[in-house]
Image (cartoon, rainbow, N blue to C red; front, side, top):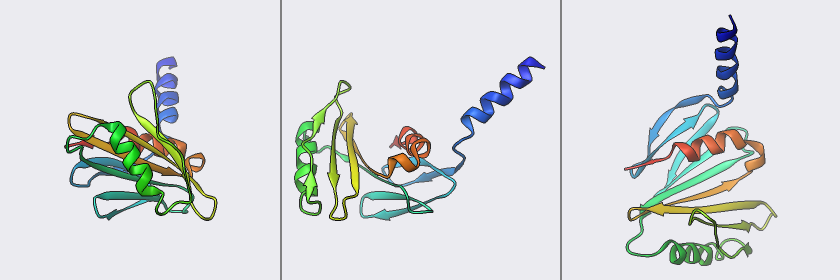
Length: 145
């Protein structure tokens, strides 16, 4: 009986994010949770929570010989064309880069750039406080091809 209770508790603990299933986006796959809509915008997959309180954009592409530092600085400069406030990319202890940006309506997004083996993955997260489990689960489920 104790074992059954432990199993039920573990299932309840990990069941906070229910997945609609793995979806293929060309260069990568993602487990998309129920209650989210996915679409493509060029090379970028955009995931929006159905109540529009959170979103995640994922781009996976070849580094084409650029370092992650060069790519992070290039993306920050490119985002400055659309966002009035863009932070300076900072490297973390894992070698990934992150920065924040704020749109004209004061909505903040956070950007994370990671990569290895000649590919990078760029995540842009908006409304993280509204769906932290779903966003973390999606980002953790990315499998590059």
